[in-house]
Length: 326
Image (cartoon, rainbow, N blue to C red; front, side, top):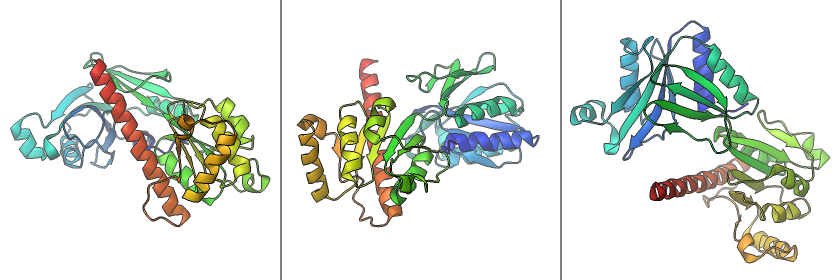
């Protein structure tokens, strides 16, 4: 089961709709300046003012709830609203840092379409949900690997389901903690450990587990630019060949657990397996941000923070490249 924020918003909205409530679904369509949320972020508002999700730092949510309580959005066609566009609105709402938001607001009275979307994402399928602002029509489609959030004033298209994949080698306590955090960060998580004593004790809902040898699995896994591979077993016999295979792919992030001394020894072993310096430079180790972590929970947070940092930098680079070529 996907535990992402999107999933939480959808699941809560479905629960409310199935209870007979009218639900307002809000999607960030565009941002300018120092907007606190990215395009595609969701918020659902119950008719009684309860809400889940976020589209700003809190100020816009308050205004949307009040407008929803007044019935401004109820049973209306999808519409676009803006915040932070004029001085009066900025003073009234208090949008931080001079940012601007463009939101698409929908009034929903039926759970079935969102339930269908949830069923698909629970089955690990990536789906796009299209909202036509001209007709008010919504539709679901299977998402291609290259699909991403788009808004062209007439159509809002948002991708649901795991966008990023994570392969964890080793099924210990640290791996369990990392997997739990990864699920909240929109990763589809696969754990690989061929050791029977570890396989029998793995219990993390929402992850896949395989006993296939890690090096063999890499070939079938086909790592791409949205794939993270983490070697957390601290066992050279289990990890070295898998890391050697991973470093010859287009994986976005490859990291391994261990001290600097262990990392130096690991690099030496990988060189003997034929890896060159360019390939070895892609290996992050010791893995994680240096926050003085010691316990499995703390180390998992350090690893997750490093992944968030790397992923955000990667997405910023993509946005910069798209702007230059736009």
